[in-house]
Length: 436
Ligand SMILES: NC(=O)c1ccc[n+]([C@@H]2O[C@H](COP(=O)([O-])OP(=O)(O)OC[C@H]3O[C@@H](n4cnc5c(N)ncnc54)[C@H](O)[C@@H]3O)[C@@H](O)[C@H]2O)c1
Ligand SMILES: N[C@@H](CCO)C(=O)O
Ligand code: NA
Image (cartoon, helix red, strand yellow):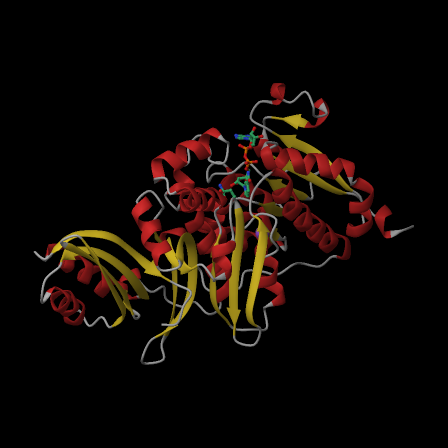
């Protein structure tokens, strides 16, 4: 008997929409190859959808609206969850794990809040929990963090993890248009969802940052630990100011290991718009693509790039996980468990070292530069570069700082905005990707 003829691995598919539909298609079309790779046939035992009557393309005998019953069925070995959201999915997956089923999910919102409970249930039952599709879609990123880099010390994970906002910022950069206009166009073309809130306000990226920080730093980090700013306040003036200095604007998820002067380590996780040099590799990532930089002590810099969303690309990651858990079932082993042994504290945003780019319109007369410089000095912020150009009776003044605690930079900008000589604070943005 060949390995592919072992006892079938029976799969409950929860959700058959954009991603689930592709998973069901590929599972059927590639059944022979998947069986050979897994070491046993991988078969659909049932598919739960909200409205079974809306799915004439699926075998009626597999369809059910009762996900709760399906996940604990004796006929199921693995639950693949592609419904999304926290409730009722959390309860289904906990019940599945408690019943010894392995779980594969793409649900970043759930993992960013409840992965500790899910991992504990998986551990207690000796089951697997895999979620490669939850961050950066098709891009193999979580398995490299959990497995390939398990022997290294990761210091930083920084990247573009939301395609919708990257599409909007790329379009603003190339057309010079404002945010609202570009979002409307992205919605019309189908690049932004009907309700784009989770994407444009940074919630989606913050969930992904929490997952990345947890894996990279062996510490439990939840979405509420992540400082979050979306792109709704990014203006055409911000992009113009960036362009003038050979930079562009990206929404980045930045997860760092920060060591203070006393050698005490903590974790910082944040999502906000950032100016980066156009020469930086992340600057060249356009449209709905994702890219993530990982820095580790021994490995140095690594970059992961590809499609972060879409039915087929996301299904690729789901199926990779499904083959992995099926293999584990066939040989009686398990994949990696939760690794949270470092339990590092999470550093508040105000204490996180950042750099600012501040673009001002100021009165063009003696002493103005000194007043602005004094405001930075008063908050202990060191200036890295100043550029002034005259525009009629005003001057355009651009200041780029060295690293300082984010709270000190915020206070400086507040104070500068109140100076009589400052007519307008044109653009304030954090800077990444260049020497400090
Ligand atoms: N679409 C993407 O590009 C993408 C990328 C990465 C991760 N994800 C994640 O994958 C998951 C699924 O996303 P999607 O885009 O395929 O969503 P979708 O809205 O297209 O599909 C959701 C499916 O869930 C089913 N469903 C909803 N409520 C249900 C209920 N109570 N009982 C049974 N079934 C129910 C629906 O019938 C539908 O089939 C989400 O967690 C999402 O964050 C999606
Ligand atoms: N809405 C997400 C889908 C992938 O998680 C994005 O735009 O990247
Ligand atoms: Na991925």
